[in-house]
Image (cartoon, one colour):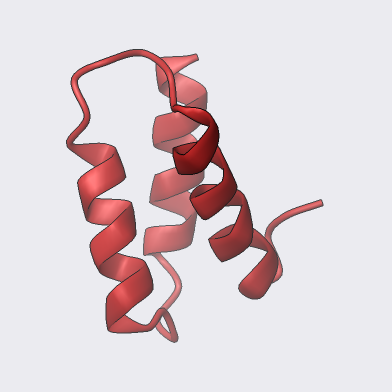
Length: 56
């Protein structure tokens, strides 16, 4: 699970068009010390993925 979250964040972080707010959210999510995301964190990550064409 941790690796999957890390991969998702890393893939998004490589996007050069990422807005500062999205980059800040990704940075904070990447700093979490637990192996899962809360429901709100998962929604935020999913929203950013969809916004930049990487989500479902």
